[in-house]
Image 1: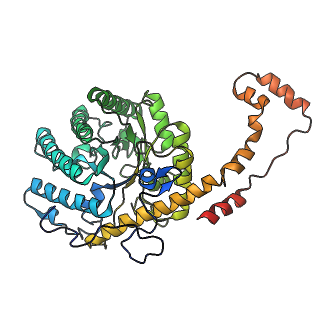
Image 2: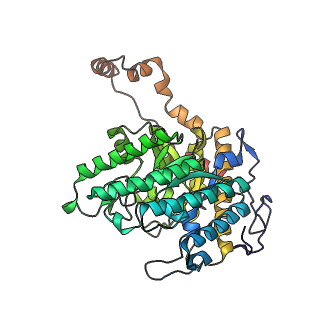
Image 3: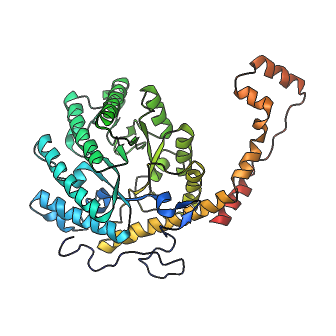
Length: 439
């Protein structure tokens, strides 16, 4: 800890129950409460992200920094990196949050050469390791920033210049090995610039092939160093490019199938990215489970009035309840977690605002988890769903799906049925009312 803590004399946040009026207390998040046979902390696997919390200065396209964090104004970049780590682990302790996530260049400054950058990252990795041992905080995932530097303005893996591709390989190797050294449970590849602005200067097939090869190289190195966790792609349809190659879960699945990467790569899904793609959060989560590529979640939200990625802390209990219902009925998060890829608002300049944002997101998630668990225990949605598809459980219907019946046989059966089947109600309004009773 620093001699002058960034958060001053604020006390650690604790569970105080639903009746608490303390604005910095957990009302629903009781980490040791057992829900469906598992501790709440183990269900939710919360993580704080390094970048928005400690690297974003509070600027926007129309104005500069508002936060004035002390480490952002130190002459020595490595001294600043160490001060930033002190503040980060102080926040992790106050929140009692079990995981964190980071980009390589969030943690350590970029040097004049890749070798210097790698050395900086190794030094901060050692610092992280010591702090993790002191606090029992774990690493949910690490990643490399392959989008901020001007060399990546035309992409990293998909860049028309092979020298940029090679540089990105060096950066990812260092970040993957740092993640492995810290016991990270996943490794994320967000293709922030892997896309295009115009097809007038873009060879789609070439760039997709390059991206497929890049992912294959990362998967090969993962196995070489003994990293056991999955690689995760984070779908997003646009921003910063006009059209990104990892548009949504379905697009990513097609890409992984095309380049034989399904064994090693899954998806990290974010709510606002789903909305920007024209989907719901529930849809993207449910589809990822259905396709067998669910990996982890970035737990934030967008603003319904704004058409860009606002990265706000989550607080929509209704939306989160149905998402957690998907998670619970599919067996949980696995090696994934709930990463708060969220930032406080530009006007929220007090250090305590970081705690309020995270604590509120954790409490909202806990409340939604309890709602979803109650729904699942009551089979509130499961029973109607089973009834709707009950016809497919008959021996005749199972034979159809097993491939034991020809089209001609089924057509003859349809002819023999005369007037044909009559539809049944989907009951959507009833089901929506059921969900609201739990929320």
